[in-house]
Length: 488
Ligand code: BG6
Image 1: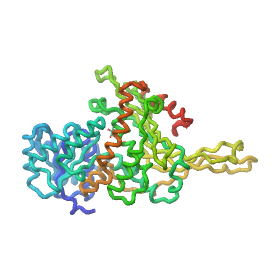
Image 2: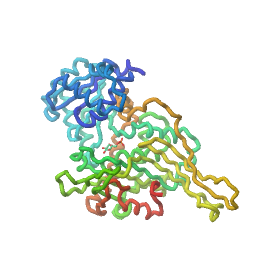
Image 3: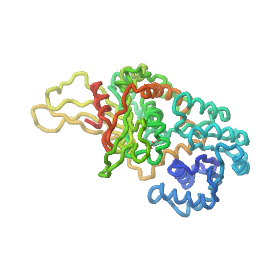
Image 4: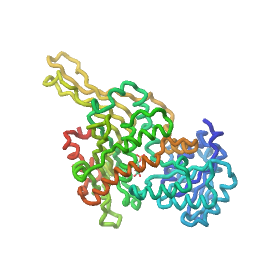
């Protein structure tokens, strides 16, 4: 714990939004409670609403109780935390209204400043401009940009150009909260601290990779945002591509920010652009219709919204290919959707079959080895191996067994992704944040698919809420003679 170093003023724009209450405040509360946030630091919530500090503190208290896990809220510690909370009314688009914020921040002009932009991306430029006009950007200032940064390469560029007029690239922290998850960081530990994987991790040994992020929740009151984005922009362009990068990247020369990001960006730049035929055969987009989850009936995506027409996908599946030496001919199948039967995020590395089976026709066939990295809801790493079934049968019978590579049980609370990321911003460590070239390379690849979908190269499919997704996603992978790991 190095509380003394971490003295800063954290300003959350969009501070009364869903993300701020659900994730950011709980993360800051934990950091404060566990001694990672200097007790003189201040947390300024910027909101459009007129509100006294007491009302704001009460609101934060109620929301923390709602969003912290059972037993995590401590009334006494909250009192100390509340002492660090301030609220300030600003109309984000009106530069004059930033005067109140200036007054507060100028009380400590030499403190580190974290500006967390948890607003719609359209405001990013205006906020940075206003901060600059009021001389609130100091050499110790950083800006955190929540995703999505734009809807495509052009709009993402426009936003970044605006922000970079006022902040150096080294002060810009683009969040992808998947990178803050402990299990996701463990992918690097697994790959780069275990020599046994080194010779296996390439096209001569790996048949293909599957990356799935399945959610059972719907859009959770975020319809206004989601309908404009859909699964491709909301999940695949960022979270799933980042997971792909961690699986596919070359070993960085060190763990410093640029070494890691240099390797990730090489992967993104090596993604093969999809042709119209690829879009037809190797992508699936679908929207959920009514169904039921855990015995509860669930309305379809459009139902109850008052909107009859929406061409937004709530499910996407894509085969990505990486054109480099290591991954030549190894497909990466990506899949993500909402309102699916169960929440399940996993990366499955499927190895090639043995070159010649001496067991063929003797007992069961040999399954391919697989390394299954489960991220959510349970965290585990399993290596699937073949083993002899004990016994005196004349023919040797085999079965698949799991070698579990799980970390020893640790009873300590696992930090949430936003705690790790917030602390890294406070410490000025950008390793787990996306550099401009990464965001652009990811959009460049995603844009081709999105344009193909906009041209209706592939039709929107439907799937029932509570199902495993559209049959077209199964057909997509089966065309390559493969199947989804969880369908086997
Ligand atoms: C967010 C998306 O980035 O990630 C949401 O905008 C999605 O739509 C969420 O539900 C999933 O995050 P997690 O950590 O719950 O897997």
